[in-house]
Length: 339
Ligand SMILES: Nc1ncnc2c1ncn2[C@@H]1O[C@H](COP(=O)(O)OP(=O)(O)O)[C@@H](O)[C@H]1O
Ligand SMILES: [Mg+2]
Image (cartoon, rainbow, N blue to C red; front, side):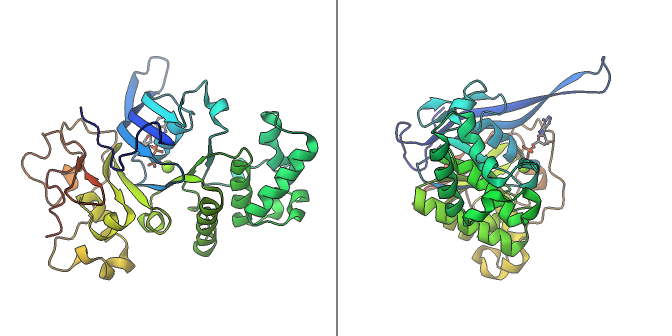
């Protein structure tokens, strides 16, 4: 099968390469005689990220974003290949690769030890990886505190003294301690107030500019991803259904599901040219089909207002739309949903 790399980045230049990445959870019904089920969640994802790229992964809750992020972090098993900076990620490697890829999660409080001082918490990754002398480690903690916008006095504070936004800054600080090239931020602002979340988004932007840090920013909110990221992948039911620059995704969505996500942002309807009144409005009234439908064709077919007879049966690959910038879509209509 031909693989399309929208940016034309070769694997040797890429910071992150995903080749045919799939992941399946084994779930067991209750009781010792309960049948085991295979639950496919991530389905053959291909992706290439350039160093320093701000990349967004968006889709409804349950579509597999967190699972994909956990594969990249080496926290769960997967099939296929994940190459980070030339090294293959897997469960045994993830300690070693922690110096290249780090994570920031939704709930900052849950990932910080309430019994310890912030200085101690920040120093922990360096201790675990046996990096530097005590003085060097403290110096690094000071440096990182400054990077995330907290003054040195925070070193001697504890978690309960911090606001939600400050806690998330500490988590981002922890992620930065090992100088990673890539951060996977999974719903990193979803538990914060809007204005605090906006400050954290600006912090990510700032870190990207100052450190050349690459980001996979995972969110269910297309607006947020559009604000921060240069390129966006839209995920539906375990698959990438659309991939393109943030501008293209926002102003010329090619997949009906992306249109639906945009139409679901009420305050923006008037500004999106594709949502003009005479065009079919896509409403996501039906629930997401999970576990993955065994549909051989398009998984969105059951909810799609443009569905044709063949859509449910014919497998659809990600195809590049004509023109520039690169824009991929997994839909038989090839973007003809805006006319
Ligand atoms: N550890 C697990 N065992 C079994 N199923 C899981 C597990 N984690 C997630 N899932 C299921 O996998 C699907 C995708 O979940 P997730 O990756 O968390 O999606 P998202 O982050 O997009 O909301 C969901 O149906 C979820 O219930
Ligand atoms: Mg999630």
